[in-house]
Image 1 (tube, rainbow, N blue to C red):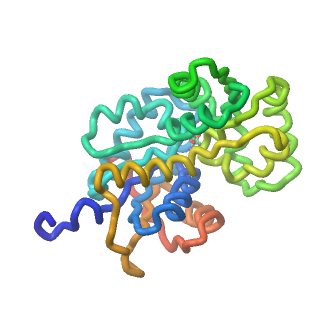
Image 2: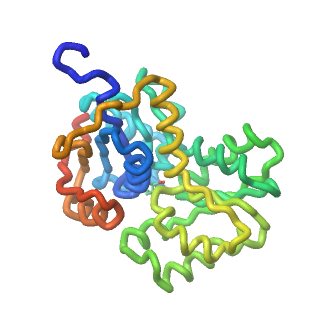
Length: 278
Ligand code: DGL
């Protein structure tokens, strides 16, 4: 203990995303490491990140990290694929607490599970354009062939709740047909929203294609990292102890509605902060 502050291992994990999508990562952390506290920030005022420049995403990420550091987090998870792709290399040099993104854990599993060495990656324009999944996959599996495909309409379809809908089926067919033709056997769901349309993507790609969910792999990696760094929380948070706290930069009601549709733990509130002040 340092003064009255809880020990580092009892401090929360900071998780951030451009908006609601990062809740797919939060959901996995809640499932896999249920004793951890979480402070989540969703940048709902400035979403989407997927079509923005690298410089802008680095600036946004720095502001969010300053906010999370003020909440005294012990580690940070960049839940957004675009921010992991565009900003993590830069921001990880600037902070001394552990920070992980979603790209490396997803790339690692894709490199391991492919049988024919042909891997597809779907994500935002920013993530696919950065070719970062390809870089990490090839570091582990140099002969792998990585094919990227940006699927920008998937994000609004998910946010409109069209998870099982003929419109989403049709768009998925159009986006994914070139990946089917290329004979990939593994497909990375390289955007926060895509695990929510996993069944549609799986149906279109067929049984022979293994889907990799970076949200799941990131929670696994986080658990291992906390053990390695001796940071795992061994004190079970009491009920009503604000184990999970949510902050957004705009439209808290919409955020709460979406959050409650995907996470079974009732998210009662989300506080709006002015992220431009950080
Ligand atoms: N969270 C973003 C990602 O995972 C998707 C939404 C956006 O474009 O900001 O890439």
